[in-house]
Length: 318
Image (cartoon, rainbow, N blue to C red; front, side):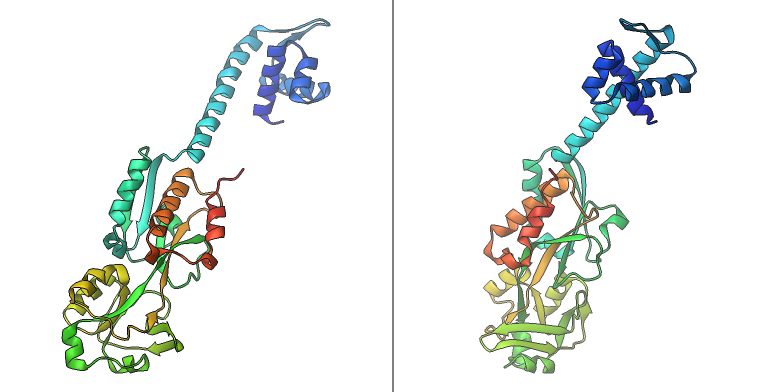
């Protein structure tokens, strides 16, 4: 029989002074209670209780064993209670992986606001454009920027939309001319962000519908911030996150060719090692990020992109 259950039954018999009363409190039969106590006595090799028609009393061995039972069962209860509190109260070390480019999206300020709100959480942040399964590297949550999620077995939920812009430096456009249509991009030197699904295919939407063009160029990189620097130097035309180039567009360092065509956006996903019921610190962090992004219209995610499922995943089990 289960030893811990037998110990709990034995404790209840001692505290109630009766097999019958203990059975009532435990919602067991008298026979089951007797079997649990007998199993302990057989295992230990000595009687723990003296039974009379009127009362139950401890033997000398029983008194010693009862004291140890109380300590063991109380420690187990305390361990379960404290662990349960970790699941409901955000605290402890939170290991997060995020793309390097988010460092330029006021991400540090958002993290600081989160830590002010949840002072019992400590964040260990790793910025890396190489995505890997968070469980393989010990992360509690990883942020992924992608057009769509494919090939992942982990739970993934969208938390924000990342708009992109087609940009080039005035010097490049002066030398090579302004593209006149989406297909005309084939004749330009296109600076390509190499990560993601089919990076050479650029998709746009506008009043004329949707357009897809396959581009090429002499510079490819997996880091958008490096590509921005190359574009500022007039290296070509590129698709970059809007938040990275807003200031450059305002001061004229970059321009937006084909401004009537909107590039396909990307989505920021939260990826969890656990398929179900993330810990309290993970739920708090991702919810905080989602609300922070949603406060700015350029990051707001469309309702059909999974907000309901995201909320359900981050809700603790009843």
